Image 1: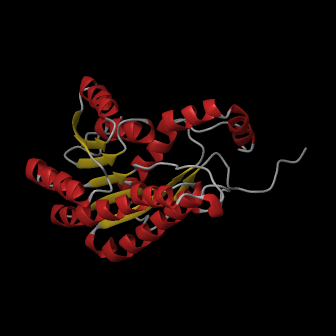
Image 2: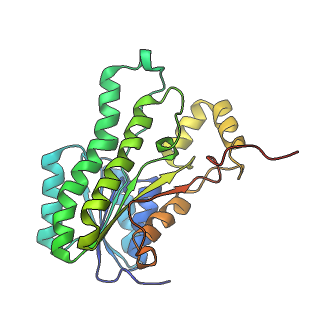
Length: 258
């Protein structure tokens, strides 16, 4: 395996499970010193153990990604301990409830936007200055295929994920000349613990969703994580401000001929 991230420092939010965990493991396996953050302390500890048992380096932090003081302190800690930041995967997020717009609780809407969108703004606000001091870097922000579509009953989620890509494009424009690339990752249906748990509560919907994907299956978290790692690698050196859709064909449209 390539160790092209040797000597690099990477931040991964939502590192306690799913895509974030697999990305943290992949960055570490390729040589990066990973700082994983999440509110899931048990999951974080498991991720750290998986990395260190494989010979990698990982530090972890309990972090509310939408709390500005906490985010600022987290990045300041990285600056103090490692003196640099080369990679940031701003990945933490939630789906929120399923309601028509007229029935959507305003407090729930605000919470989804807080965790999914405000967190990306805060992450980049504090990551970018340290990356500049480090001589450049790469940021990948997790959106969703909901940044391209309008999934019924998920107005808060869709609005927040559309917003993530807007933030990404502004950050890419502002930082391209400073050696910092910023891109969006848009996963489709992915078999994360959160999705698996939701599927168990509504198996009929889950079966319908999987059947609607041309690949006829959801993604494994590692398949999405590898796309994030690629976006942050030298192999994607001229990719800036783009949205990489990794969805098994979900957003192709049309239908397979019989």
